[in-house]
Amino acid sequence: MISKLQEKMNSYQRVWAEIDLDAIWENMIHMKENIAPETKILAVIKTDGYGHGGVPIARMLEDVDFMFGYAAATYEEAHVLREAGVKKPILILGYTFPYCYEEMIREEIRPAVYRRDTVEELAEAAAKAGKKAKVHIKVDTGMGRIGITPDDEGLDFVKFVMEHPGLEVEGIFTHFAKSDEADKTSANHQLELFQNFIDRIQSELGLEIPVKHCSNS
Image (cartoon, rainbow, N blue to C red):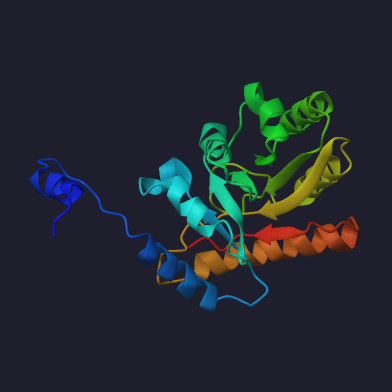
């Protein structure tokens, strides 16, 4: 029997997409099978899950133990997920504007930090919100967009953030520029830079950042 919805779809003149959540789930399982058992996944569902429906995807994955959380492009995208009842951590991958800092902190949405002025403004907003701002430090190992450099200057920034009142550094991450290419030379070089920088944070600063992530698919 053809449902009324299916009849409507069949007669629709414009392009439409039918999203199979089972297929998305199967993809997640395949990814999980190819990583270490203790490693978790951060699902990037920016721009409404790339048009596939960010809220339904997040709801499907909300109770999955190997899902650390989600990533969005803007505060507004992250806010939509929170409004829909999503509880897991949400990371904003790019720049976050100061106008939303207080509300973002209250909703426990994690911004990416890589500028000192952002850190100072977040600390002020955290004081007003009455709770710490959880942040992830962005490291530029070759993407060339945003992030601190993995060098002495970058170490100074990490120390600055880690010691800043009102902030809790939950994670640190980088982004591969050419992970989809068959030749992994570039991605492997970025990974080496990132790992060496993490080692320096631990050995020279004596600091430990709980979540470290970079292996975007």
